[in-house]
Image (cartoon, rainbow, N blue to C red):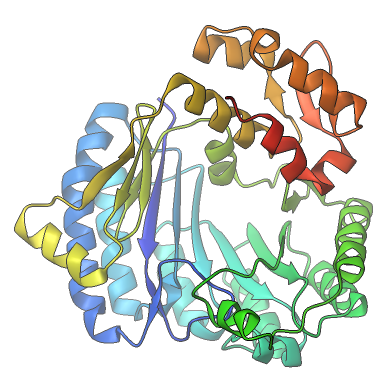
Length: 379
């Protein structure tokens, strides 16, 4: 059975100003206890699912900043992961902050079976990096990616962002040129979302956050969706572009209804059609593992309608789109019977392409995706 594993490392050296992910700075004193609790969860829950479903196809370690862990703790965690889940995964990704890695750290990762790295660079302009709370510089990002390549990593992704405070189209263009020069096979580009509770959220509430205009952000979006394919990066999901054969297998599994086991504080799991969430607090997570191993709660019992909505949303994020055959197999429902009217209306607006295989967003549909997704909500 195909399935994946997500491992959450909730530590950061500094919280980025836009980030609302469950991650914490200044809690280094909890790292050792956290890794020990995480190893215990891997040994118990991880082993249980390994025995039930076989070896997972993919593993993804995210955060937070996984590479904020000291090398000995990362080595310990990778050793336990290898003991329980095996070796030789199709894809084992670790997220990296360029300001937290060096040649020795890369050797720890390679020795632990990691074969893909995802670098959160966001921009190659130092002024922008400082403005969004990143701890690394442009030069450190370049050195980190090149260091990973020298260490033997070829499957490397770089994250970029657009719509940042003070960012111009020329800044994004320069960042794309720099990524191309680094010859990485995968690029993720995300538009800034101002979330409540973040530094940017508070600044926005105070009227002190100055962002590019809607027209400027749209120009950045248009540039990346046009330029990246010209450079050989094919779009395969809303925010993800890759050279042929280098799309992220783990991320694709999220959009293809593949089950995954989430390990660690705040980690989410999707098992047997149900979604579970672990406690977000590092202290509560450690205590829960030490006491009885109970750190999960069922988010909700999905109705058929909710399951169909979610399946449609996730499938439509990809360029392959929503398959009639797969939808019918999963829900014993004809796609046209459920969404025929919606698909026809969105196709008329130029947001959706419909054919015998199913439907997928057009370029216009990707640009205005929220308008399309809203129509797939069932009453």
